[in-house]
Length: 477
Figure 1 (cartoon, rainbow, N blue to C red):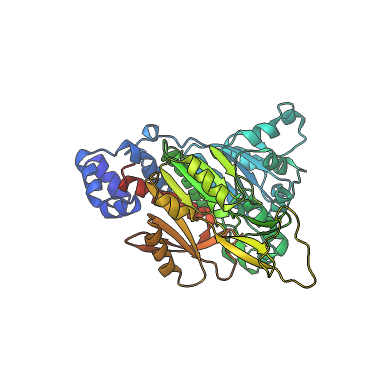
Figure 2: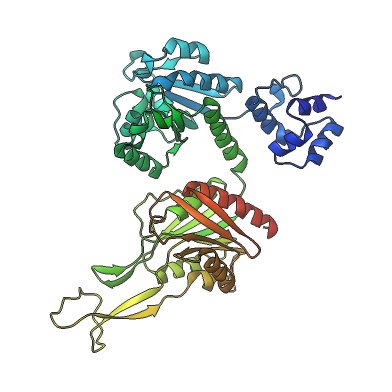
């Protein structure tokens, strides 16, 4: 038996390894015959061996493996779960990730900086006002150096500090001074986790792009039971490695691909102080724009009026009315892909008196004692249908369908009538989707309908990007 065959056997055998790597068993069999693991699978094999706690050095020397190029700052906050962060340090050290560690004063009540220093084999940072550290401006260095800042365990206190802009120690100062991706793994009493103040801080942080590894449900050290238990270190480790690996492998997935996205509501003015619009927040479209930008696409985002931070895309165009949005979309053509997630107002409303006398909409309409106000409606041009049926139609056209009943049926009908390639349909009957961070959708194409369970809009954007990548192959883009 050659070395590759021995390695495959150690990792569970041909079938199990194929399943874990999402490959055909025949591909693994070829590895055995050639006695060689493809270079582009080395990283996946390494991660799998770590998960299985299997030493593969003699089969696939670590020096031959591509390093996971990442710098991580681990912030350990106070709480009984602080001791579990030591296991996180051990796991990160095992794959030679560059790791720095900061401990809060409360964390030092449970574990010591000396213990962390010995385990990580480098200085553990604890004090914002250290003369030795601050002559080198270490709090800025620690804020700017890492690719990811992981706060584990993250307490209700640190969540409140960051959400409200407090910076009274080294950890909170770093978090406010950093451009890095911030990921929190909370750990706290179930009542604290579900307290309205903590939930409000959680939402604020989500809106600012902070990610969470959600706490587990179970028995707590305090004797109570519920949501708030610190996630297992191995799960946190796998999440971080997955995040790094995805960022590295997907960074150029859509390189050279131009994508035009519409998002948010549009507004139709009645007069200078009144208007007709809808409840769209723009969150889903913004998440899609952010995800596709991360993957190397040239993204142009055309957005109606919103109250959320504008994502970093190649180009952002802000509009108000449906006509302005259509005009700007047309001006940006041609493009490879069009994604219409905006909730465009279907009608203009023209105010009239009962005698059909029109008002000057440049001035505020004054209330009349005797006359009711009537409206003449003028239908706005359907942006999705117009572009999908034009001479400048992009190769891939994707639309959204907000429904209050018969979601799948109506979504399928729109796919056909508007001649688009993909429809994302959702149920908005309870009004909770608008402005929420979560959504449940139906993904509809001409052959299939996939129902995606309720999940974060960020998660939907990630999965939709994967779907679009498959479409690129189908359309030879």
